[in-house]
Every structure is written in C-alpha cells, then in structure tokens.
Image (tube, rainbow, N blue to C red; front, side, top):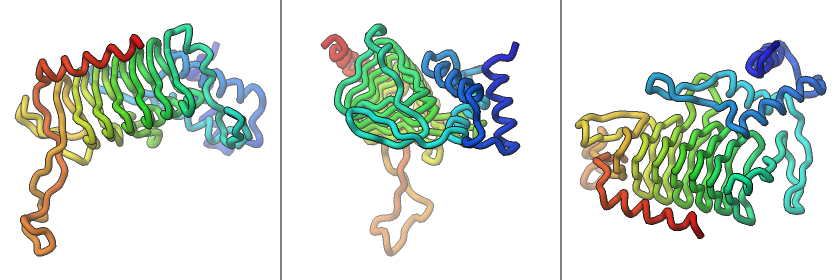
Length: 278
C-alpha cells in the first residue's frame, strides 16, 4: 500500500514529465488535498531537526509546490470579498477546540498551514502554506509567517515581524524559530536563518545568512544562525569600503551582537504571558 510520500513523489515525477493543471483528475486532486490536510494537522512538516541540524523534507516542499503547479486559479470568497488563488484559506473551525484564538478582521491563514494549540493570531497577520506555528505561540499584528517557515512552541513574534518563506530549492531548509524565542517588534528573519531556542532578539533586528552574528559568549563569528539562549541586537561594524570621500567618518555595515540572556530580560518576556489569559 502506497504512503502519502509515495503518492506525492509519483505525482512529482509525472509533473516533471508534463502533467498540467488542465489534465489533473479527481484522484490526483485528492492526493493534493490529503497532503494539505497532513500539513494542517502537523502529521508532516517541511523541515525537521536531525542530529542537531535542521534538514528540509524535500518531498514535503515538492508537495507544496505541486499544489501551485497542478491547480488552476479559482475565485473564492471570504468576508464578502472575492479573491483569486489556486488555494483557498484554511478552515479554522478546529481552532477554538484547541484554545487557539484569531482576531478579526484580517487574520489570514492559508490552506496547508499548521497552527498549534493555545496559540494567538492577532489581526492583521498572515500565515502562508506549509508554515508551522507551534503550541502557545503569539503571532502579533502585522506579522507574516512565510511559506514552510517553522515556528516553535511558546514563541513571541513581536508586531510587524517578517518571517521569510523558503520553498525553492526544495533541499534548502526554511526559516526556523525554535521554542521559547522572543522576537521584538519589526524583526526580519529570512533565507533559512535559524533562531536558537530561548533567545531574545531586540526590535528591528535583521537576521539573514549574509549578516554576521558576533557571538560574545563563544567569542566567534557565525552565519545563518543565532545560538540558543542569546540576547541579540543590531550594531554596526566597519565596512571593507573603509574611508571614502562619500562616507564622512568611514563606511559601516550592519551586524548582530549576541550575548547571554540576562535574568531581567527573561523576566520581562515572561510578564507578557499575562496577555494569554485575557
């Protein structure tokens, strides 16, 4: 008996051989729908931690992309407004029974997104296909959680935070925000960056693999990740451009500085938990 993974891989093979949305039949659409259901329940996910490293599940990312390649654009209606997409919005009827809240008007969860229990989605916010929002996580106003992004349990995404999506190439791990992280307002996390468990990130910090993280705990410079249990914030360091007539006082580039999480910093983030009881 074939598994869902087998069915998705077979559909991918046929798509590469020329299968189109116009030629898809009911059985093939049923595979796509079963796959989206599995994403929503958390049965499958776009990436997992193996041997201490986050690794993409390539067949899952292929399944997400197949839902774009093998579906035609349809007209849907939400809140009295027509929109045109290959995917409808996610059915959120299961959220109340799991003590998860989403506020009106403009909390958008796309089909194929997993939202955990005891989570809060504030309006307006957007959670894209393949994303995973963990238990007890707060997605605040004006937040975007991109395609396939993996957000852990008990995470706080400050207002106006952008979590980038990574679908291609399929072997590339998506953005990961591990359990217990607090991201300040206006943070940006992109291009497969991994934010380590229990870290607290200052507002308006950009975390991307091209910007160095100066880890003062281990006294090293790392790229593409923020180690666990760090307090991180943006600073500027000298650029290789150096002195130049166009840059009075020299040129500088952004960097991230990471130190130990201080007790008072953790206490400040814990006080925000009271919001969940209101």
